[in-house]
Length: 95
Image (cartoon, rainbow, N blue to C red):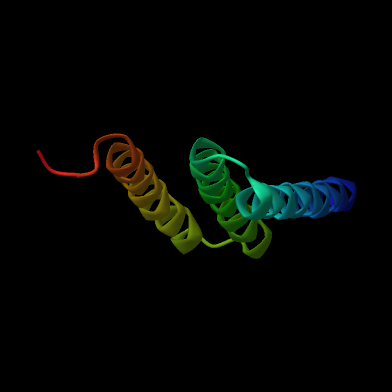
């Protein structure tokens, strides 16, 4: 049983590192992105990475409140990405 906990612990640490590197790369794309579409995709990628980090935090701490927070952030991230894309394409959000 102790060996399984070590494997889960190491897996969570590796996942934290991978998501952190991915988040930094998305931030770099956000800053140097030559086009507005690249910046929108970088923001959406950052939201997905943040959701992954929050879920991993919930797994590592063993509490369920982080999963609910991740669900709320996922809904807000989707709506904000759609609203930003509509604003860039049409100039307004609500028709």
